[in-house]
Length: 314
Ligand SMILES: C[S@@+](CC[C@H](N)C(=O)[O-])C[C@H]1O[C@@H](n2cnc3c(N)ncnc32)[C@H](O)[C@@H]1O
Image (cartoon, rainbow, N blue to C red; front, top):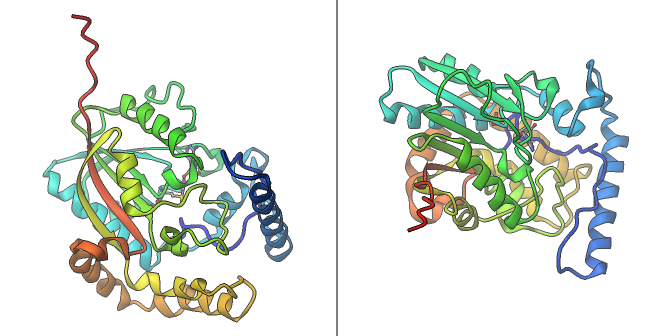
């Protein structure tokens, strides 16, 4: 995910030594060491200082700074929000009511306005500095439904779930809470990383603590299907994957030639205007074909909430 909303390279969130259940101590130590060195490197390299009032309340300082500083329009975002708009258009609603969870800087809202969609919008995020319509932590969504001024038809969860927790079991609980929150008839549009930073391969030399979990498309689907019926799956972004290929090398570091190649490809070369319609075309063709669905930057799921479990005692 190389949108402005797909964070990269730097990481200054306080290193957390995540509890890795059932793994040997040595592995935990390796992970902790990598996390600490990634955070230290980042601090040294980027020296991103909280520059806005309220920065001391940031839950993830790295991501907040990254999103606040990044360019909002890019190849990946172009394709992503066009596909989201296409999915909303399919619903044939006159005025769509959208709840955007993990909304970040509400770039979805900007794109959907520019694309001419008629909609109402409510965005939730746990970062106050993004100034969401409601500050809600999806890990603890107490009273999350209060304050939403409408019953949403569409719930967006775009590149959010991978940020929440490292354990699938915990994510199952998060999804159960989410299911309880959303109307029975709504449509969920969910995007998740695949080839972004080569996530789906879970390569040990690529460590990116901002993504707390890396899953393949089938694993994400299985997780979603604990609470939602997946109706459609589509690959999103093919040209925007190419910059990540240098990361396949074990020699890749953000500072060396491979890192510089990545930055050039992602930040400059693939931002050439004509790539945008081309990548949208590829996503609407290859993105619907078997294996190709998991070789894209992100995967897009369209899903419906499963029927609520009734508690008949008889
Ligand atoms: C990669 S950004 C995606 C932003 C937006 N959905 C988009 O695609 O344009 C991930 C977002 O998830 C939010 N987030 C991460 N963990 C969260 C949590 N526990 N509760 C609410 N939001 C969270 C972050 O603050 C960030 O805005």
